[in-house]
Image (cartoon, rainbow over all chains, first blue to last red; front, side):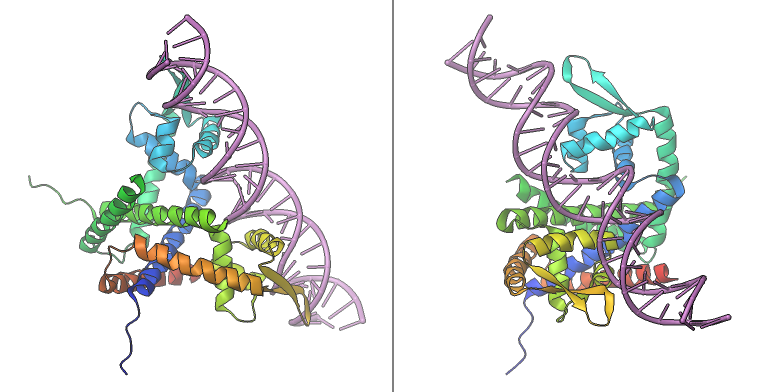
Length: 154
Length: 154
DNA sequence: CGAATAAACTTTAAGTATAAAATATTTTTG
DNA sequence: CAAAAATATTTTATACTTAAAGTTTATTCG
């Protein structure tokens, strides 16, 4: 009796566990580096990164949508960034419920230092992927993101 | 003047962002499913999964090592699993500092239900990877995990 | 033996995270 | 126009997370 193949589900599970483990390793290292080099955290970096991609700033709800974290969560992170003078909440004319979060000059300067270091850390950690492999795998994962986000909107 | 190639670091950064986004999407879905179907959470599932792989149980420190989370973190999760009657802390003969965490019968039964559902969810979400692709990518990521963990131990 | 060191855990403080409820403000509609 | 529904955000309650400090117990070694 020939050996049965393992079901594909087992291999997909293994793939998921590897994906999770590598992501967590990289994330932990980035988190630690941000803390050590800048006294910053990953969530704060993520918020600043999102704001730096949108001139004019983002509303709280847009921010939580882009980052895919809950509304209440963003409130706290923006509060702390505000305390540190890196972002400001600007009232939205015509809608007194909403506010626009923007990077301050200080925030922009700080973010560009952090972003440069961040890119270098990632480049080093993923150095075993040559450029072609990086492009190909990124595209493949983009496909996955596509199927996952379509489904969710159903 | 010919267009300069983008530096590899940009492509590695893009790869990292995709990796992060796909992992978070899958993780969020698993978290939500665990909550909805079992009233459970991912950290609790992870602890039970680790315990189920080691008959005889694990010491707190071993658990935090396997899961790569801090000591103090494991304390809280095990506390809650204990309250729910899914695990127990058994004293280690000869070392009154340590204790061995073990799944109870109830914990084992509960975990096997959750694990089956978990595998099916992952299989569905990663369904766009055929078996060969899953095996190949898992191997590639295993290599990445290797380089990342070597470095850290330096 | 006894002091110093190490090991196993827990506690604490601060930050991050979610879901759900509460608040305030628009917009829609009967 | 006023009641109802929808939006934008904050608050609350609970859980997870880490780093650092603290407690208790074991081990080492002078």
